[in-house]
Length: 128
Image 1 (cartoon, rainbow, N blue to C red):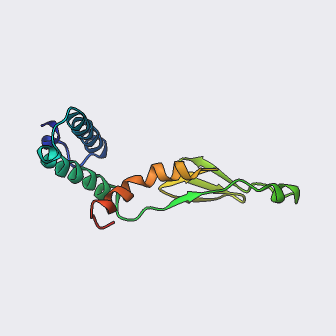
Image 2: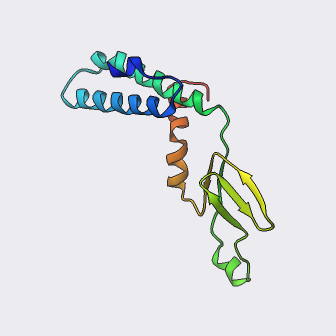
């Protein structure tokens, strides 16, 4: 299998191998292959997934800025935060902060999309 010779120092290579393996597993299960027969591939997929999480680091900090409420807008409040890029938050007064991800205004779905791999790792029994 291609995933056995993946570069374990490259997040992109690990993601590609994991996605490929996930697709192959799904295809096999869809074709009626018993789960027991894809067990080794599923274990390999979990290892690839956890290797990705290890490369990312164990601590991640996300920032989600909610939009002003109608009441806040009616009171004359205004936004004081802006995203410089997907990882940098700028606050009025030329202060900047770095995060693993910045969501402005960011929905719950967007935040979950970025951290769902952590949830998967926890479900796999990996210490996150």
